Image (cartoon, rainbow, N blue to C red; front, side, top):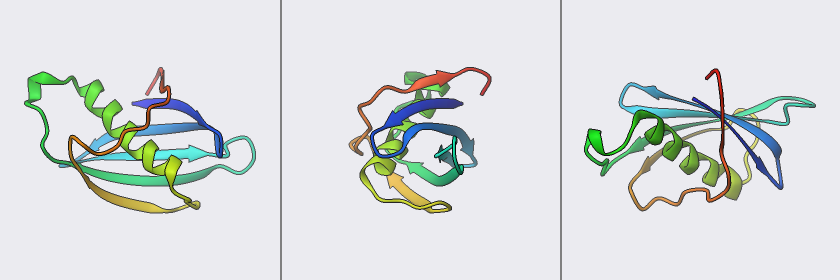
Length: 103
């Protein structure tokens, strides 16, 4: 799935989120108007709810919020890769995510 969001530091950004075996991969693109840059997250989420409690789209959006929260709070540079082990209490970004159709 693709999500658009905006931060004060990076301006307009795009997150592409998908399942990757037993984890969720989130690629965040920023500075798209000048020189596109990418930061990548591989999230291993534990303490998952039972499969029927959350939709696939909801799980991807939740993982995106975790990655965006780290991206927003931490200085990153083009090409950075992070692998994180998360749980239900991992901080989520509270801002607005726009679902970009076609993803």
